[in-house]
Image (cartoon, rainbow, N blue to C red):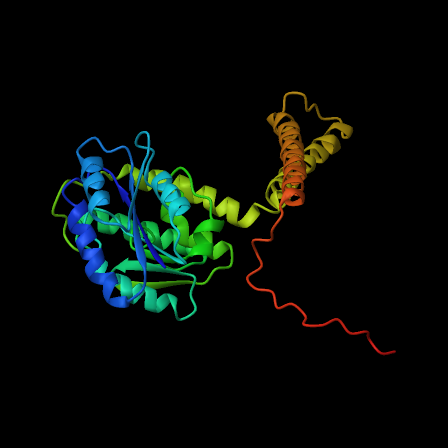
Length: 317
């Protein structure tokens, strides 16, 4: 079954047209499908429109959040309520074209776990396109996952991908990076992008600053989540080594008869050694927390498939 998760925030006029387009795109596939609309604290009549749609369409589910928590929380709620083997996400503003969903599903059937849309001909202002290109380039170079458009709302996932990813804050735009770090196969497909017909965009330039800070979180969690001592211990040893060299140098000067009490290098050397010890201690504490968490984990999220032996036979000697 296909589950389509749609985060909604003040999109009253777009809800019903979007469902009709989803039906036109998915019914010819001959597969059962459902639409999970998540009302992320809309202040207009979006929930009333969703209620009417729920009453008229048997394959529509509606999840209403208590207030506006953001797109990541809306997607997480939709993922929890989605029952399909394949999950598709699409924005409710009608800029993403539901007719592209069959192409995403076909790409998914080629052996990928996540297929991200790429708004190759983006219908947004020039400033947003330029900032988005810079942002995607930086993230791709640092993360190793080279995608043209991380933040496209149109994506297709295998169900186990969304069940194994925990998103919060504004990490929704980094779902392909998070999946890539977990070893899932990620692909990208150019999709049609349409001009906005109703409402207005709620994203400004400031989201790229927040996005950079969120990316630092993703980068740290992906690279050092299971080995924090490599980061904090490395920083601690480096700073401590520099501080030690400075103190040894000052000690040599002291034995040669030169006064070092007024030297700024003395303060700097002591500070570097102390800060280095603190970083190293932080790394050790982080390792203890990580090891405790791994011991409590029941399943292994890194395993994709296991082929059990059909029989156990003794080994001949």
